[in-house]
Image (tube, rainbow, N blue to C red; front, side, top):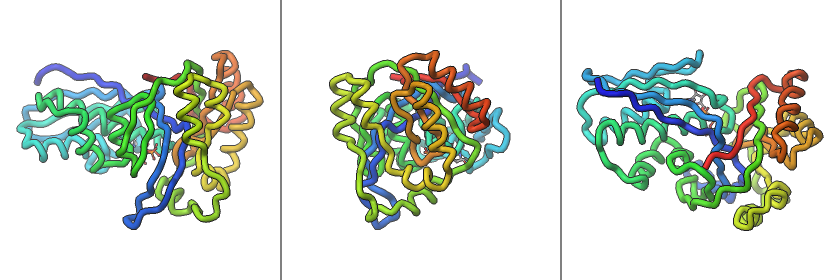
Length: 288
Ligand code: ATP
């Protein structure tokens, strides 16, 4: 019924990630600089006459039932806005899973936008963000995309300039990291140093790539990086291959390196693969 809607759900990296404090409800107050990357899932949606939500995917092992964030997004919109009829959603997964790249949140955001369009709801971005935060702290950012400062639990967003163009090498080592485990094991009181988020903002404002790269830092590396030495090994390899900087994204384990030359990034990709440090490796770039 009706035509297909094809949406891109972009992955993200954290140019900076700081945890300010732990809240009583178990959430954490954060200060993060988020940046979309070109690497994306493709979300194809179409309306169904039957009153059902059908999710399909090309990724084995990804549940397509109520556990899937795309399903949750469709269900929330159907219930909240009394939508008659159903929807079919196909997820072409390219963003590595459980990787610190918010792949699930990106799909969730795409489906919220898709439901808005397919059913003519005409909801504003702000309204979609208010619905989205109920499904995940990164969803409001994924609805916005580009470069943004994310504060509060992730729902207080300030859009930023796009940082200078560069090549981004993404490598996800073959380990699964639970975001919950990483936050629970973060020892905030023992940290001697916090990432310079204000410095990162300033470098973005002045379009200074080298200055920006000097300041890239993720406080969660103190947990995931300690547990999995392969993260440090990939960072070392990327830097030796010419990256201006290489750090972990989100709760990990994906490592990203910032390169000026795409050739150097491709060489680093081949080395990471040949040393079996990671199977999922992608040459990408910043997405506006
Ligand atoms: P974040 O950076 O927000 O912590 P992540 O990259 O660590 O995200 P995701 O890939 O978003 O993690 O998903 C983590 C878990 O969520 C997966 O193990 C998966 O079972 C579940 N999940 C639910 N829906 C999706 C989806 N559409 N895509 C990927 N994972 C999903």
